[in-house]
Picture 1: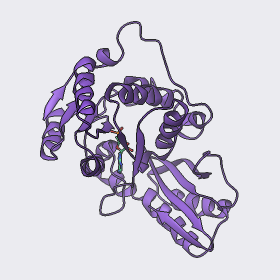
Picture 2: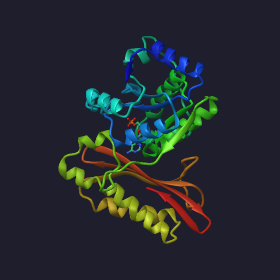
Picture 3: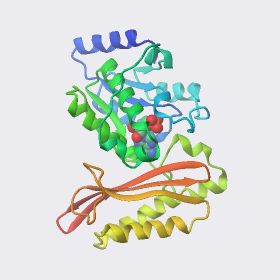
Length: 290
Ligand code: AMP
């Protein structure tokens, strides 16, 4: 697997692939790769050749009090995983390569970027949209793969791709979980052993919501009450938000009648974790993905 560090060489590689009529896939990541990332890679390998993964720990999506400095950077292990998965190339640019001196252009997806994650993390989605637009421009993939774990992020990227007429199709992949339900995340490495156990509360709460939905419950306030109760019962957990939102607008819904998300953001000790349940009502029946 080739490691590509410059924008110019990355562009050259995919330009050649496009000339050869090949279907290019891109899996953007911040590294510290786990089975969630690798599921995106495997999905991309099924649809595309060549497949590129990018690892870029984007400073512009971290707030001043966030965990950029301590974010895990196991680059050797990441390269091994991508090599074993037979990824064609790793795009591994430096921060200066992506943001050279004088860089001053940002993308802002209005409305969607201000809510929920955007409220707790001001400027986060501006950083995400800007770097994803740059990656999509540099690689110009036919398909780009994102996890539903970051539901609001992928919705914002879809909106940006639509609004800016980008020639990339966004593919959304289900959340990959540990055996006990905890959604895989590079940030799970921050959890001490008691916290790691407590962290399953996000899955347990969403699982209860899923059971209530299966019984016919459609009332957001009641579902929220269930989520609040379960999070409160976990001494190491502190709720940031538990919201039921429309899957298009990310505005709160009162009754679940369209595609929606149950979204959770919970502090376990100092570590902030997010998770979600996707809901699609189908007449009296309901389809959910946890
Ligand atoms: P990150 O490295 O955290 O920026 O994540 C890179 C991509 O992997 C994003 O599209 C994430 O949504 C996705 N991802 C992270 N964790 C998971 C997971 N547990 N299941 C599925 N996708 C994930």
